[in-house]
Image (cartoon, rainbow, N blue to C red; front, side):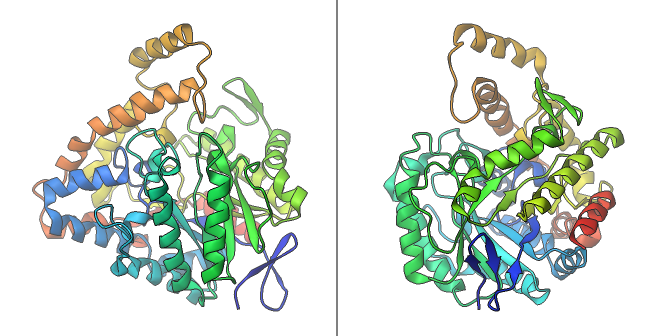
Length: 457
C-alpha cells in the first residue's frame, strides 16, 4: 500500500511515521549545465551536439550517459548512507515531443522505470518530479528554458499537455508502492500569480481521478517559496518548500557572516526555514524540503563553512521533524555527494571548457556574480542609474541583468565550442565519456557523505 498523509506526517500502511530523507537525482533525466558541464539549457545543448555527431550517435551517447549516471551501485550507496528517498527530476521531452504533442513516447519511460525499480530493491522511495514542462514553468535553465520567459503560464496548450502527461504517468505508477508520490511542477514562476492556483485545482482533480492513492508534492509559486496561491488544502498532499541558504550559494560569504549585506547565522537559517514553512505549519500538513544544499568551492576553509551551513540546516529540520531532499547526488564537482573524477575521460576532455565557463560566470548556479566585471559592472551601473525602480520578477534587476547577458547570451555563445569537443571521437571514446559518470568513475565527497550518514543513522 502507498504512503499517505496523516495530519502533519507521512505514514506507511500500518500507520508507522515515515520521514522521507534523501537526495535529488539532478542532471539525469533533466540535465543541468552546472551538473554535467555543458553551457545554456539542455535542449539547446543536445541540438548542438547532435549537429556534430549526427542523430544516431548523439542518441547513443546520451542514452549511455543516462545509463551510466545511475545504476545498482548508486542505489546501494544511498541505502548504505541511510537514505530512504530519491527525488527524480525529469524533462517532459523524454515522454512527449513538441513536434507531436499529446502523443506519449513509451520508450521514454525505460530509464525511469529502471531506477524506480533499483531504488525499490533497496527500500528507497521515489518522488517523480516534473522539472521541465512544455513552454517552461519558470525563467531559468533548469526548466530547459532558452529564454527568460515562462511561457507555460501564458498558453493553455502547454497546460493541457502537462495534465495529459500526468494522467498517463499516474496511471502507470498508481500501483507502485515504491513511488512515494508525484511532484508535478518544479519551482513554478507564474509572474502574474493568477494562473497557477486554478491550474493546480485542475491538475489535482485530473490526477485524483486516475490515482487517488499517491501523495501529491506541490511546490509553491516563485520557486517554491510563495504558498498564498493555494486556495484549499488538498487531501493527501505535501506542500513543498525549497530552502537554499544565502551563505551556501556560490557567491555566499563567510558563515556566520555577511552575504551581500545580509547577516546569516544559525538563528537566521531557522527564521528563514520557519518563514518558508509557515503555510505548512498553519495548515498542519507535513514538512518536506524538496531542495536545499550548499555549493562547494574547493577551498577547504570555505567548504568547512559550507558543511556547517548544511549541518545547521539538518539540525533545524530534525527539530521540526521535516523531511528533506538534498540537491544533488552526482555532478562534476559543485555540489554532489560524488563527482566525476578530474583525471577521468570526461573532465580531461571538458575541464578547460568548464574552467572557461567558470571564468565567464556562464552558469548561474556556479556564478559568484563577479566574473567579467569589467564588462558587466558598467551595465549594472547603467541599469541602476537609468532604471532605479525596475524590479523584475523573480529576483530583481541585478539578477535579471546577469541572467540575460551572462546566463543566456554568453552561455548560448559557448554552445558551438562545447559541441566541437565531440568532433572526431570514435564510438569507444564517446562511451568512455559517458562512463565517466559511473560510480566507479567518480570521486566521493567523503566529508559530505560522513556528515549525512551521521545525521541519518
